[in-house]
Image 1 (tube, rainbow, N blue to C red):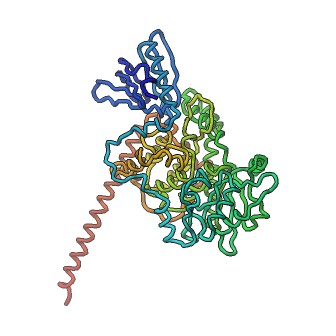
Image 2 (cartoon, one colour; image 1 turned 120 degrees about the vertical axis):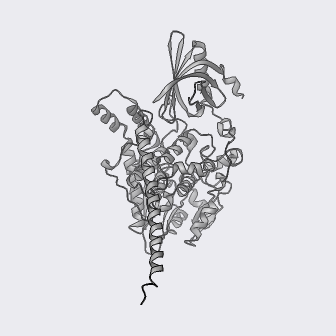
Image 3 (spheres, one colour; image 1 turned 45 degrees about the vertical axis):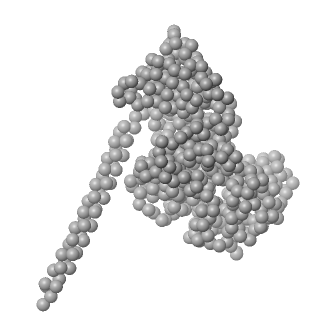
Length: 549
C-alpha cells in the first residue's frame, strides 16, 4: 500500500492552529505518510510535527465553509485546526483517520525514521539477558540461564533466555510450562542480595475445576526456598476472581500441594476496568466547568487513585515479605503480563537502589516489561479519547509510571531521574519514532527485525545532552530500602501527565530552574569551602616546624 493513496489533500494554506497556552498560529498544513505538519512563515513560531500514531480520535465541525478539526492525542493533548473550505477539511479528516489507524506494524514510523543524531550506544545491545545474568552470577551460583525457550515454542511471550534454579532441568521446565497460563512457568524476577531471598513471576496455574496438580511445577518453585523457609504466593486477583478462573481452566495453587507456601490474594483490577478508569479521569481533568464538589466527585468516580493505591500496596507487601520476613515470593495474576509486572517492578524499585538510577530503571523496563512479554502494541493502541470499541487496550504501563512518580515524590532525593523521564516513557509507549515499544513480545520483535530496522529509544535517551535533561538535581545515592506511604492522603493526582495541557506550567518551570540554580550555586560554594580548607591545612603544616622549640 502507498501512503499517497490515503492522502486526498496533501497541503492546505491558511490553516489556523490552536494549542493550549500558546498563541494561535496561521500557516500551511501538510500531510505526510506519518506526520501532520503545520509550518508558518511568522518569526519565532514553533512548527507542529504530530505523529499520526499519536492521534487517538478526531472530531469535525462546520460553520459555513469554514471547517474545524479537533485532534485528540494519546499523550492527552487536544489541538484545534481551523481549515478554510469544507472539502479540504473533510479530506484532511478522512486522511488523518486512515493514517492514524494503520494495522500493519511494518508501515509504522519507526521503520522509516532515520536519526539525525549520532548513535553512540546501540540501545538494542544494552540489556541482553546474558549481560544481566553476569551481575547475578557475581552474587550467587544457585541459578542458570536456560535456552529451553530459544525458539519461543515453550512460552511464546517469554524471551529466549530465562533465569531458573540451577538444579531444575529443561524437561522439568517444559512440564511446568504446560501447567501455567500461556506457558509462563515461574522464572526469576529479582534476587535480594541482602539475604538471598528471591522474587519469581509466572502465569496462573491451570488447576481447573478438578484440582489438577503438577509435580514439576511444585518442584520448580520449591527449589527457590532455603531449608526450613516458607514462601509467599501473591495472587493479584481477589479470591472470588481466582475461583471463577477455575471454571475457565485456570485457578490457583492448592495449599495441600504447596505446603511450604502461603497464598495471599490482592485486588488489582482487570485491564478493561483500568481503561474505563483512565477515560473517566481524563474527562474529569478536562472539564473546566464544574464546582469543587463535582470535581472531587468525578475524580473519586474514576477510581484511578484507588488503582494506584492497590498496586503500590501489593508491591510493598512483596517487598516486605522479601526484606523484612526473609521469605521468597512468587507473583502472578491471570496471564502474568500486566498486574504481575506492575508488582514485581515496583517491589524492585522499593528494594534495590540500582533500579532508582537512570540506567537501572532502563534495565528494569527492558527486563520486567519488554522482555517479560507485556503486550505494549495491544495495551497502548488507544488512549483516553478513542471512540473505537475497546479490545485489549489498558493503561497498565501508565499506572506503573504513576506509581513510580508517587514514590519519587515521597523520596525526591533517592532517584537519579526526574519526572520528565517518566513522562517521556509514557509518550513513547503510545507513539514513537523509535522501535523499542513496538510489538507485544520478544518473539514478535525478532520476527520484525526491530534491532536491525529501527532505532532504540535508549540510543537517544542515553546521549549526554539528553541524560542531562532527565537528571534529578536533588539526587543523592541512597542504598537503603525505601518504604512509600500508601495512605490516601499521601497519594496525589499526577499533574505532570493529567493536567499539563489544562494549565500553564510556566511558574513551575521557573521554580524548577531556580532550584537547579540554587543547587549549582551551593555546589560552587561547597567547592570553595573545600579548597579553602585544603589551603588552611597546608598553611598549618608549613607553620608547624617554625613553632617547634
